[in-house]
Length: 66
Image (cartoon, rainbow, N blue to C red; front, top):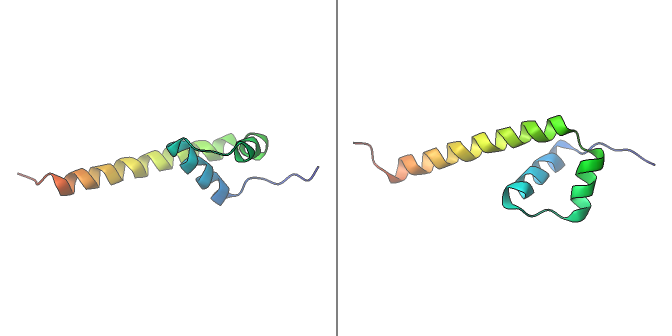
C-alpha cells in the first residue's frame, strides 16, 4: 500500500472542518490512518488562538473604550 502523509494544507482543512462540525467520512479515515496527532494538536491550538483573537478584535471594535 502506498503511504502518504497528510499535507499541512489538509491538516488545516480537517481542523477547520472540526471547528464547524463537518467532515467527510473519507477525510476522517485518511486523518486517522495517515495523519500525525502532534500536527493536529498544534494546528488546533493555533486555530483556537486565532479564533479568540478575532473575537477579541470584534468585541473591541463594537464596544467603545471608556
